[in-house]
Length: 321
Image (cartoon, rainbow, N blue to C red; front, side):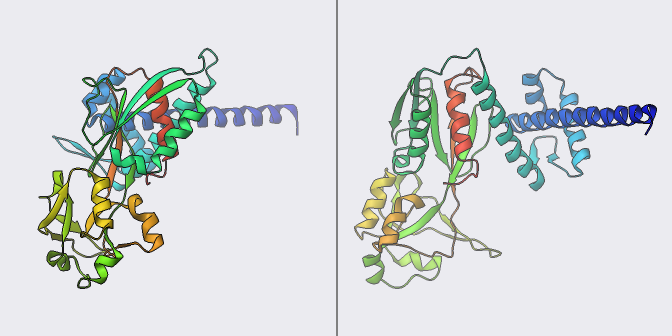
């Protein structure tokens, strides 16, 4: 091979590499804009934060859709909604952004070891979950951060009660610029083995109407929706025999044999394995609960709040507890 041919081959390879890098950078930019648009729920909201025009934001997402060959967003005059492909890409993009932000923070040569106080309020029931282990791991990695945890069934305010972060629970979480879903918790219908042995067998959600029902007071008037794969959901509203405002006491009441209750699965797992409790109607599913974090709008992007947020997000990257 003569020198001229070799030179042209090297130049061609450099051209391909350079253009591949440009394409990749454009794709990463478009993915970040896509995620920010979903966070805000509109092109206009994302454009304000990114200091772009709404038409430029829309153009980037259209370019991303064209490159991938799929639709990511359903557009209407009132709102945006994700397609199935859009939901998958959003999850991957959020994980990517969280990893990049965390790694940039870790590698920053000018940043001192994180220190200070971080005050977090959480639902009391999560004290019995594996989320406590994620918090403990975070504390071990950052020993100079003083964590203050408030486990309470009373909804605490971020600003009024002086918290840096709030962990919330609700059936259907809607993302915002100051909130992020961390994971989901499966709910199960449970009862003591002794209670089930003393009462008629339960084969269908309608069979629950004749049994003793225990419920959380805030949702005791909300019907339950049971579903099975490829079958229509069944909604039932049993008469409440006993109610309480605390999920842990609800479970303990069920454990004594007072009746049936819907609780987070993690509360009952140990007792089910021990044969003390049973999952009732195990082939039927109840809607899961989303666990998400909220933080003040003025929280520094590279402060302790986002450090903890990214750490928790990475721990529960698979999305379920």
